[in-house]
Length: 301
Image (cartoon, rainbow, N blue to C red; front, side):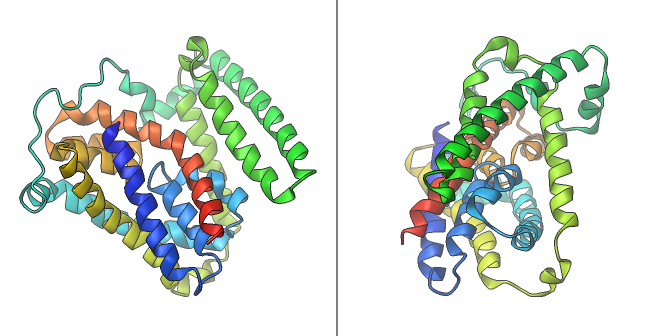
């Protein structure tokens, strides 16, 4: 968790520096900074969630995620091949020792994003629980929408932000209710709905925008990934965090939990698998808060 905090601190610092560079050249600089913060602490789902609140266009959203997809491949390839040796020798991070990433007994299957896990959504024994989860989700949305309308009557620009953060906060609060938390395959159902949303966004975008290279967006993606990785490594050395925990946590923050099992396999270290999944899910939770906070804070500059 300390390593995840350091990853969040790293991306906030890097996006702040980028905003200082681009704030006068591009009026959308604060939006890009918010998007980068949300993506590289949680994932694309966080960017999709805060997109209506920060007002970024569909085209910019598509371009951002296109650049992110390409650069993330390079990032993953580097970490999975020479990452351990590089950070051990160059940044002198200490080697992994058994017990460094012990987080207790957690069922990693709950966060499984394989095709086979999604297939279980349609199993009869899972349907009643998933219908109940949808009902709870609808109730959360109703309460959050009411707050949106109330706040919008005073300040229209804050309404959508309040709604997004209300959905996040109430959902996290209800996750402490054991019966709700243990409903099977809610993660897969939620992600399936997110995929439908992302498809609808992509279908409505003007793909001609991809032909026009956007230097600010490219820099926010490329520099955010590379520079935050370097800063994260330096902070991990300062706090004496081992190299494998740093790498797996960085992957869970930059690329989200689905990439964690593959990276654990590349590191040949299953001991860091659960800690990577846990910090990734923590990133899902905090990404919305950080993204919105960065947008409003940087908009003041």
